[in-house]
Image 1 (cartoon, rainbow, N blue to C red):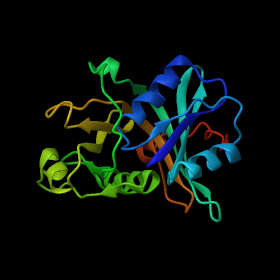
Image 2 (spheres, rainbow, N blue to C red; image 1 turned 45 degrees about the vertical axis):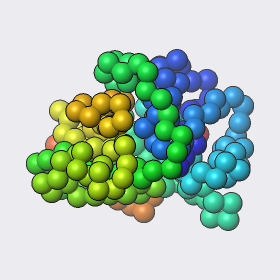
Image 3 (cartoon, rainbow, N blue to C red; image 1 turned 90 degrees about the vertical axis):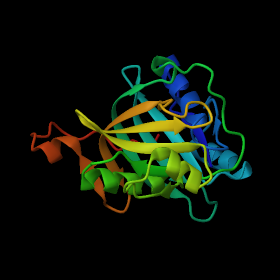
Length: 215
């Protein structure tokens, strides 16, 4: 599905976040960045038959931004970015022994029940960023969606006091509760122009937008 790495000189928490994501994106791999350039990473991802490259950027010791890149030697490109309020690691949610999914299965994205249109739009965008499949929630249970699409893992877009949140379920690990990581998102931007900003949505005066660093 995807190759996951970080910006140069990541913190321990950022590396842990990368390892957590490896455990919820099926057949994906966390790779220590070292001195690799973006081009090196794209070639590594291509050689491993991944469709996406995910780079986690750090600010003040914590993950700040997730950059998603399409892996294609003839048509690679940036797909979009998530700017984060914060994260909660799997171990902080009571799950310390989750194993990576070393097999192909659908990564399905849906929403919690009774969320707004902004949440649905983000769920669709997140499915595009990850190469996953968006499924409208309707009245279906999360387990029902997982069974229908023959998968053990769901990404669920939820309400959050300061924006939106992404939570992850692994039904082979816990059939009732999310395993995490929990990702709080304050801004999402797609390269095609779609975007959402928590401050703008709340009518709060912007103090300047984070820089569009590609590294």
